[in-house]
Image 1 (cartoon, helix red, strand yellow):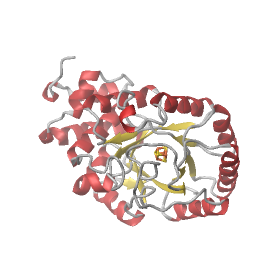
Image 2 (cartoon, rainbow, N blue to C red):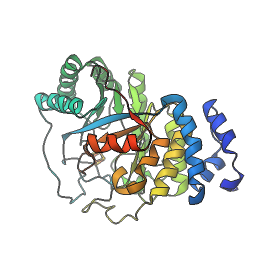
Image 3 (tube, rainbow, N blue to C red):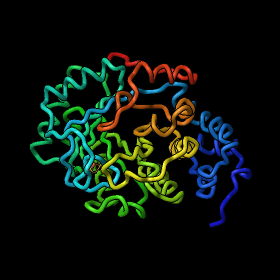
Length: 335
Ligand code: SF4
């Protein structure tokens, strides 16, 4: 396919079509990812118009909880918790229901609107589902306004239904990268396995949270494919992670991302997902550095207090960043 030059792109038209729900043409998506650095302010300003139409200037705060750490049988190359990782991380089995409930309390105290319990596993068995459902029921009863999400690997339709009944609202299951590149980062399950879980989640009436990771050695085409896949699977929430290479993982020497590359990718995900929540997720602080504030032109959500096994900014520092960039933290309501 002929590549399109960014300078030939009519950004006003791109915005109008995104707002009208029309899918961006692929060569335009590629041009956005290849935006020259000196035109990035124009791209961010255009993307802001799409972001603002759905979310104003609000930024939602999310908190992750590592419910089970470091004993995963899968081999995802980016992950410190995989069976092929030699990273020095905490290793523990599933936390008790009391501990998971206390995590919800801490999340609320940290300003979070959404609490996501994550477990390192291929997927839960019956015992784990019963345990997680118990935790969901108790958290739902105690914090009715707190948005409750789980990220626990591959799920069957019946398991997704049980979690929905227990009060979960969202399931995170990232596609991570393109279908083509997936075997380069994981061999123990497939991209299609992940799509099946997403379909099971949607069929259960849960909202789908699914995005990916930029910076694993993928091509522009892979990023564009991933962005289209999140749109076509109608992900309600799209986390965009920027690889934080962890010593001891197969991707520990992955080449570094630039802040500009991260910003362009975030714009692409927003323009293809105009009404979905788009989150700047893991690697935000590390890869965006002094340009972090600019990403709010594209995303409407961030995490505080870190990312499972890597550190991140706490609430106060993040709120200051958000406000200095001209945005506002979404209120917790009655959470
Ligand atoms: S399935 Fe999840 S926890 Fe397990 S290696 Fe992959 S990313 Fe890590």
